[in-house]
Structure formats: structure tokens, C-alpha cells
Length: 310
Ligand code: FAD
Image (tube, rainbow, N blue to C red; front, top):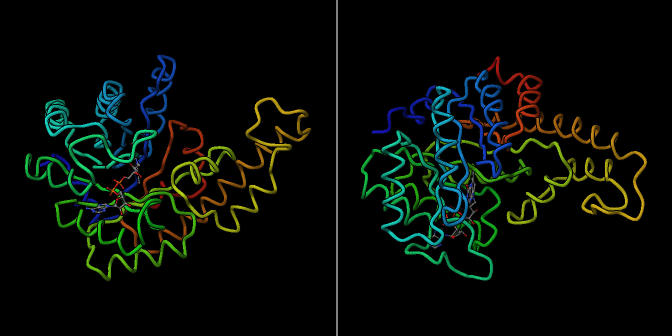
């Protein structure tokens, strides 16, 4: 059995966790050491590490998992099916277990560019969950993704919820949710999944709003998330003219630096209001997409009073 049962903790109180990604450069790795020291002071229940399509970055992912463990925090590795055979999945999961990583977020992953399948032995996260349970019993604690607005490619929200229920039936222990700023929709989804019998704990993924480009990119590049009216207004108010995505614009917005700072402040305040509302809904955990930016997370946690409450 996994050494620490996060779901046991979730039964007692709301957990707090952070999501990190494996840096691509030596400088990024060096900075990560400070990020871990800074985030650790908030006593997170776990820190998770993203996993690239096809396991391209599995080496760095494993190093980051070990760095997290060395800081005395439970590492959770993300894992996806892209370009994986049964055998390559078994090889990598054996290695994680040997290295003491027994928590996993079991994902399908996004199809490789130009493909319309995983290009591997399995098609869905439901298959991966079954495979892990059949092969390893309860040696892994398994998280799965949930999409409050429905996965971007799903046929319908009901079909997506049925797939989520299948993940539970196949052995998933808890859910980590995709971005969702539309909290009315989040509440409706939570109600729906509970009504159809999805009972496992709900750990809510929250991306701190600190940067206009990242916010738009995360919402629209893959996830198809609604930006609610309040968030849209913040983006409009601090829009950098002529175009925040243009690295070589024909003219510079004279208020550029001020707008960047003001957007960050307004974005954090917005995130805090979202966190307040989520915490009132009876969720089981808050999972902050820290994106290796400890300063933003530190500011957010202190301003939101998360540390004193949790
Ligand atoms: P699935 O649950 O397999 O769902 C994919 C689609 O298929 C959905 O439309 C669903 O409705 C449908 N479906 C599911 N099961 C079935 C079934 N049995 N039969 C028919 N239809 C089915 N990606 C990465 O590559 N690396 C990461 O580190 C990473 N981290 C993430 C962290 C979080 C918290 C979340 C929420 C997502 C993350 N992703 C990551 C993105 C994820 O891989 C993509 O969203 C991917 O497109 C779908 O993954 P999934 O596990 O939700 O897939």
C-alpha cells in the first residue's frame, strides 16, 4: 500500500498541494531547489510533477520527484499513455516504485500533433487505471483528472462524467480537477458527479492568475475553459496594446510595466475570491498550479489566509 494515504488525510481536512514541472535547463533546476524550500514552509500534503507526452522528460521528472522527497514532502508523479506500450508503462512504473514514488496521476495525455490516437497500447485513462490496479494492487495511490466543464473533446458532459465514474470503478482513489473559473458550472458539475455515484475525494486544481498571456493560453490552447465575466474584465482592463502576444509590436504601450503589475494584483485578488468560494463548497483539497513560481504562490497563500486555515 502507498506509504502515505492522501485520501485518508482528505477525509480529515482539506489538503493543500502544489504542481510543478520539470525544468528544461540547468538554471531552471537550480532555481527549483529554492522553489521547493520556499513552498515547503506551507506544509503541503504533496507536490506533483508533470510528465511530458511519451515520457520525453521522464528523467527530469524522476529527479524532481526525488528532490521533493528529499524535502520531506510526498511526490506525486503525473503519467500519460502517449506512445506507451504495456511493457514500457510497466518498466517506468517499476522504476518509480523502486525510487519510493507510489503516488500517480493517471492521465491519457494529449494526442501527438497530427495524430488522432495515443499511438500506444491504451486509449483512455480508464485503461491506465485498470492496468495499474491489476498489475500493482494497492501499491500506488491513484489520482485521475476530472473536467468540470467537460474534457475539450468529449461528446457531452454526461459522457465525460460516465468516463469519470468508470475511472472510479476501475480503482481511482481521488480526482484532481482541470482549470475551471466558472464556479457556477463547477458547482453544477460537482452536484452531478455526486448524484451519479462518484464518491471519491475531489482535489480542486487552481491556477493563480498572475500573467495575462499564461491565463489566455491555459484557457484556450488546449482546455477550452470559459473565462467568466469578472476575469474577462480584468484582462480587458489591463490589456497591453496593441497585442500582449506580439514580442515585436509596432509601438509599445506606455503603461506596459504598470499594467503587468496591476494585472498580477487584480488576478491574485480574483484567485482569492475563487478560493474562498471553493473552500465553502465542501471540496477535499486545493491543488495550486504553482508552475515553479514560488513568489506568486507565497503571496497568494498569505493573502488568502490558506496557511492559517489548513
Ligand atoms: P481521459 O480520461 O482518457 O479522457 C479523454 C477523453 O476521452 C474525454 O473526452 C473523455 O470523456 C473520453 N473518455 C475517457 N474514458 C473513456 C472511455 N473509457 N471510453 C470512451 N471515452 C472515454 N497532460 C500531460 O501530458 N502531462 C501532464 O503532466 C498533465 N497534467 C495534468 C494535470 C491535471 C490536473 C489535469 C486535469 C490534466 C493534465 N494533463 C496532463 C492533461 C491531460 O493529459 C489532457 O487533458 C488529456 O487530453 C486528457 O487526459 P485525461 O486523463 O482526462 O483523459
